[in-house]
Figure 1 (cartoon, rainbow, N blue to C red):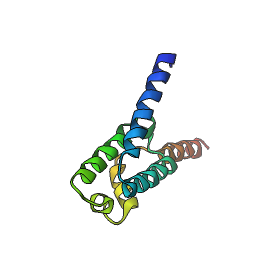
Figure 2 (cartoon, rainbow, N blue to C red):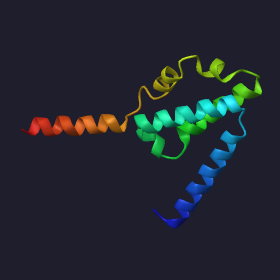
Figure 3 (tube, one colour):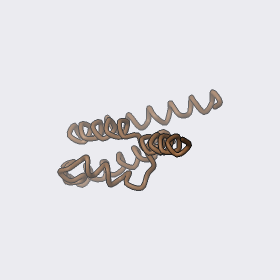
Length: 107
C-alpha cells in the first residue's frame, strides 16, 4: 500500500465521521452500536473502504431528512437489521471456521 493510499483512506474516513457527527443524536447512537456490532461480527467487506458503513449513513441521512426516528428506519431490532445487511457477506468467523474444518479434514 502506498503512502498516498493511506492518506486518501484517512481523508475518506474523516469525511465519513463528519457525516455521522452531523446526524441527529439518536441516529449517532444507533450508528455507533451498529459499527461496534460489525467490528465484532467482522464482515470482510467492512475492511474494504467504508462502503457498508457509508450506505448506512446514506440511509440514516435520508431518514433524518424525512423526519423519521432512527428506529423507524432500522426497525426495533437493530441487531436483526444488521444481520440482514450482511446475511450474504463472508465474515472473518466464516473464514476461521473454514480453516478449522480444513485442518480437521487433513487428519
